Image (cartoon, rainbow, N blue to C red; front, side, top):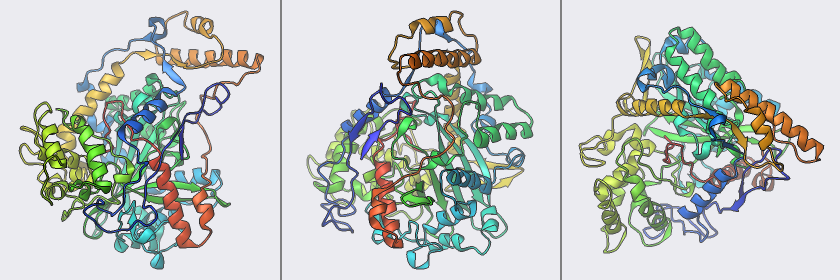
Length: 619
């Protein structure tokens, strides 16, 4: 497929960018199962698998092709007052988890799914409902033979594998899809956290980061389970940091709002109706597979944290608005869990997928994994190496990287030898075990249950460094005590303070006019007029930008040239017409397998998302 930057009306004078990438999978003659020479799933490594250099090239080209940039001359910017991180209340501006706020507005799962369904209906999926989306999400855990609606993506597609790795069915989780009263089943999930992840904004400010709602299953005698909606919010001026300024300010202002009802109203606006000039956070496109990474650098995802049966498990999904036939259909589709390579890929091998992972992914990134900052070390993992699930409980080789790493003896000059040599060059010097543990800490399993993998022990991830603990496989408790859902030690001691510093730093950056990178006429005279008086507020800049756009559009129209793209949010989602689904035909098993394959190809076509804070975190 081509990974393209969608220029939304700028065609004609800005070139589309397309770099071909191969999405890997099981080639003709490939097989499942394990094989010491072929990596954990027996795949022979395809010749066209992207290397890090190729992914970096694509990522940087996409960034450079963005239509906006911040204009830095002094008279086009203003310097806001510095923000002291101590003035940021992390429980109001970063992770809202008190019942007083969460109950003061409708953050229900039904409202969130209803908003997504409404977007789908507007785009042609006339049968979409909140109940249907809830049913289809959990129905992915059922095999076709016992599915509530067997036309969707089921767990036994592709021989009960996903991405070539084991994808066991979980019918107790799947029973939620068959509840006699879907509304009542859906209502057992309550919002337990509303989360600001502006720090996950994509490199180059393609987007304004992720903004999340965490739902936890509650009630007397009810086993816990979680659904997390992790939306990527597009930057209306992609490529320009100041395009996200209003979002940052909106979150920051919550710190000084004492009234939980007022806080709830402000969050409700951000998530369900949208700030002026922005799409609402909760929107179909913000969780969906797309034919292009577009300005957002990829959409967000929906994740589940599943406890209804053992072993405990985490999974990941994209929504697909499939318009291959009409009316369109919207449904959740399982995808590999990002930045979660299958554990057996750490077992030393000289051929196959494991060898490609070790030589092309791990060894070139030891310096990134060796960064001397627990909030910053990271590495990028292309999707073809990611497992179907992350499993913190009863760890085996698929999730315990170090057990896999030591499962076979190393050989002179092999992966273990090379990793030990590379680790020793880090600052401070690390052991190979500490590098492996750092990669594990970045996986869902390692982050959610670090004690299961000995990551909380002294010096487990570096000299004097250990990974902070979770709150028992979660980072926010489903149950509230004294009106508050407790957060994990990892959040309260390490990550929220770091995110507060990041937000303060962002708020202290110069606020600058977002200019179009490429316009087929000289617009300097328009800019000078628009900013003859230096701006003093963000409103001044936004007003000048809108006025400037109108002047440029008038001139472009006069010259019979393409107008600039609209700065207003889009209102209707775009459906997918998928060749694989069209070729598969209407048979349920064939269609669901083809849908899953097509969605995974779209996701694999996006390069790993590097954040504006400089790492490849996907937590």
